[in-house]
Length: 430
Image (cartoon, rainbow, N blue to C red; front, side):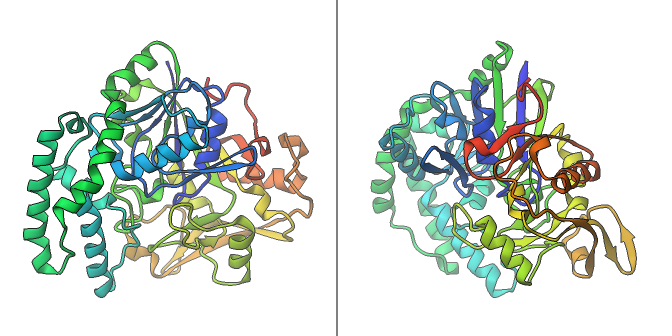
């Protein structure tokens, strides 16, 4: 088998879409395994920029089957919009498969998401959700009341379930202050999307396993990043799914034995969107420089990202949990021109230096990052197409990064274009 998993090592927005697009040059199937349309993977193909939210990034490689796995929560209306936009741009969408086991995001999930976030904000406990219904959809899944993709195949039964759950939402949450749902209007909006998605429904657990067992090169694509993982992230400021390598197995139906290589996508610095701990966040001109030069604004929400120096402590923990074999380092070019580049190699907590990532969010309140100053480079990296063509200090920075996080570097990206990414190993999906 040749099953590769690609996960984000930080707080998301590491550039996974671009790296997946590069890896899919050799892939024979690409599978999205968790999250929903709160993700935004940006891929630049020639003069065109595509922002993908649900459809796997491999869709821009002709003939590569693209699977939305059972671990994803799917908004049928948003999926229809995304697929139609791709089709209108000349992209072949016939290879898309949607898991019959995936959970569907319904209108009440989005209303409930907004209600929960508003209630939390009033208590000073805002999470920073994208308000797309992701969390409530996963909540219904765990409560065993969710509606799954396979139910689209019987629209009459689906409509009955839709009406029953919509009425239950109105009865339970509207008295508490949530927005009432007009069920007939909501069904009218949803029905065309169900008809559109229906032909793409498959038992993807079978198709994914068949591909792996046949020796095809399968790439499993994650959304968000390690520190948004519901178990291992900076809880409670996390998403509602497992964004780690373990989630790749539960979100596709593949055995852990099938995974042969793990790729960790990692920015040359650190960013985060939304609330929650961020040890190396910069509030000065340097933070603004990274944001401006790096174009750090959310692909899905447009929100400005919080920016900071590279956090080796966090990334070492992340690489351990994910079992990362190779790093794909992105946005190295954003650090071009700096005299000094800082790297966080420890945390000072209550006067003590620690090198492990804290488990509790409250531990970050008095945390101070311990930095080492590394020499920067004045030369541009944007035209480099090999490790040897990088400025010497950029090479040293990458070597130190790899040493600190205990993983090898396999891919380097020095700009947004496809040709600004190069591999350090001969067979990336081997």
